[in-house]
Image 1 (spheres, rainbow, N blue to C red):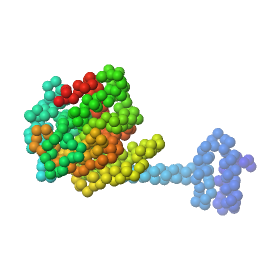
Image 2: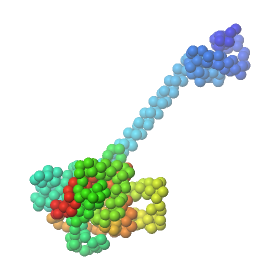
Image 3: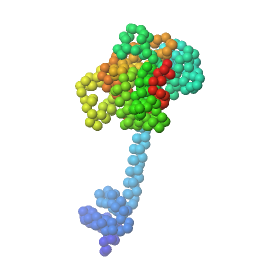
Length: 411
């Protein structure tokens, strides 16, 4: 009997008359499969060889068992996919529920801070209208200027704020309105988290108005050392650098180290949060940038002094509890890089009654404040890409004017 026809003959043998040993039958089947591999239909035979009968012997021609096995396997895979989809949907629903359940108003108040028309802001009515010649800037009834944020929860940010002029901030019992200096808004944006883009807070970068000329000169000299302002092509070059992941980190690091300017980051939560959540976000950003510095061989952040400063920074916000929606946390950075934190339980405008202000403390190591600022301004993954783009746009408006004329125009 030819070898190619042997499997068919074996399969036709009746169980009672067939006394072949199972081992012999396996060897015959293996030999037949080797013979079939040289045929044009060998892929089918190789697929059939995976299935075995109840006795453990492979039968390359058992179409029924093959079909049943494939069907059972497909059913198992479908059940697994459905279970995974159910778990993912449950996680998304739980995340949305947790976020929405904590979106509450401030205790004892149903009105929204930094509100728009028809609402109140720090106890005063706000009537918003466009500033003549500059529709993006809004005015209240007292003439204070505001900028739209892009969110209905905190719809406006003040264009100017006033902060203590001295580097060592006054105590919580002192008059916060004494010896204050004006800061001008350079750009703002919304901090979002997760793939759902859940809004956490609105942030704005402010620069002391008296330091705007110095900041302008630093950026102009960076592109054109002999120029007094930048032409369109030079502005495009600077914009490209400030939006690039690597170049923006280098430029802002240079500015924060050597410009000797005072600046502030004003943060207003769009929903109820806590200081630990805010602190953890800054710590993750600092850790990412220190690890990046270590990868390129820098040892700037490996000393014990920096480790102690990080512990002090974490302790600054530890045990503070909740940061309600509409409250204001302002991080300031003086000309020496000293970081200070000021907390206000409600928003405050230039002409409004002073809101309660709590001085939380300060961190003297300038590396901490520089890394926090870089988390918003430089690098690949910033805390708010919208804020970075708006700050870059504010820088473009500075450098297009002659050096030394920005401060007088703002005031």
